[in-house]
Length: 100
Image (cartoon, rainbow, N blue to C red; front, side, top):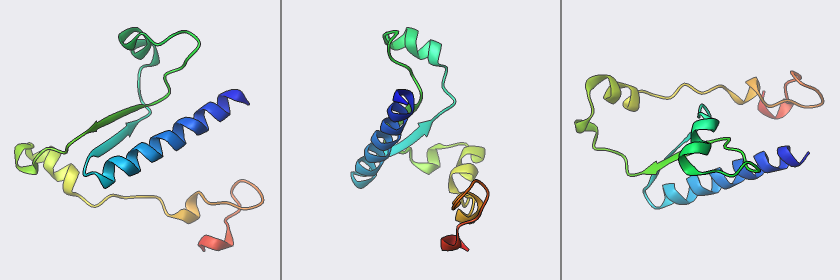
């Protein structure tokens, strides 16, 4: 249970950092595909702590400075799952009537 609470805390902290940074005109990109062992070694993370996510925080580059493939990726509309695909009620996979 403690690990779950820690990860929920990480999610809440990441969300709050993202919200505040965005309000200040700063870009945030959260990454889950990190290498925990490399993070531990690079940043001196103690054994009783886990690296579970990474945040890149900074100012977005001028789009004209990007090569064509990156500019295309960054300016394309985002394809997100609809709420009905992951908001359930009662049991897993039972679509909530709130999002139908």
